[in-house]
Length: 356
Length: 181
Image (tube, rainbow over all chains, first blue to last red; front, side, top):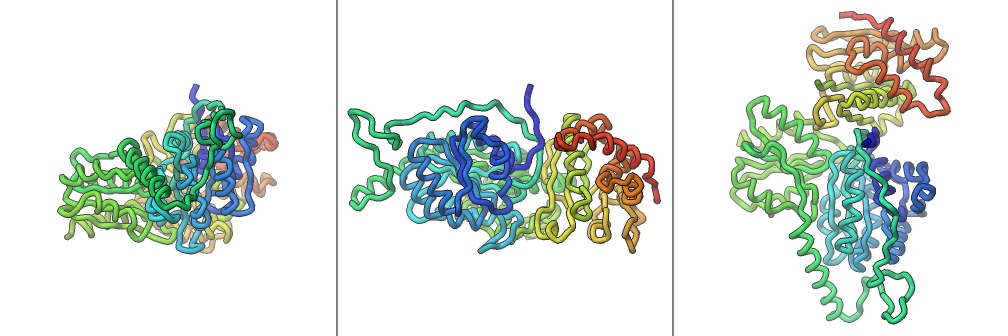
């Protein structure tokens, strides 16, 4: 029988990590993601699967614990919210440079600075364009339901190990705090599989010692490493684009929105269609790699595209890059923790695209 | 069927847990649900609200600004959300502590004196389930057995002795709710 539960997004991702067979979680509390660690502490997964849960003394410590544990080939994760993610950026760049698999979660809130504790999507640039220094990419997943918060823990770890790269789940306070019905799957065994070709688990006989580092003082060697990373990202772009379409078959106008904004847009589509405005939605599930090709294909038969994001307009830049000129593209969003209503989204589609 | 509800009142009145029990009840009868609480500074300042959506279909936006039903349990909540009820919708309130009563004439207004009733029961903790009883009398969208199941899921095992009290509170709520217009 399938197991159904009513859970918060933050609880679902924590349960997902346990069931995906995670070995460890290191974190530091911050609203609106504190329930992740709270749930893990209450669940005591060390008794269920042997998974370690540790509250670090800071976000900087937490991300470096992830670095250390990931170096040994363990399945580990951390989570935080916007200001805490900023603190982790140095460590994230190091993880990407050293090609360490791990799962990161940002339950984003309003910024900049300490900002507010309400939902926001203004960390898009930080998530998909770097955040830390150097030429690197994270694989970025954008859950838009509590079910996906659970499911993406599995997908996230899979992708992280497939590409030996950090995977970031970019969520927000709305998806983290809301409760929905979640269908849970079976517990995966916590099988620590040491890939001896790169992990630090003691030097095997007859093999050179492994070194995990992001440092190479020889620029020519560092460039070779960079070229290898870029080739990996290229392969990832080819294979891992994920997105979902709603009502696009007969649409004249298109929303592009992820996470909580995608939910709000679906309601706006319903209201719009009842008034005779044919709107569809493309929901990027992977923000990196961005679904540029499917978006460009759809765009050619649209009268206009509205990128909806709780920000001043970050993803809209990728929408424009994907589509090019020829289609009218606008952005709509609230900021600082304010959430637009479906009616406001629809009103802005009319104002920005139809009236012009 | 889709029912979009806002429940608002003071922190401690059981607003969030009432929403949770309602959501659980709907899951028991195979419906889709969403529950989104106020978790911002307004909660820390003493008022709380939760948006609950129950539906036979996949739920789109968990955030709304108009509702089929508003359950408003203090003056601030009444002032803030009275205008957010859809025309023809339902407003359920408790008159306790109010200095301004609901004024709209294009919606159905019901009153449940849950604060008085819970005082009579000598259990202010029963307050939210009395309100729940009132709501279920107006809109029996979830079956009462499923509400009991939802209660069992929501009440921690160490408080299981309170189950009967809560069932009684629901019955009282169903009895005392009155239609004003």
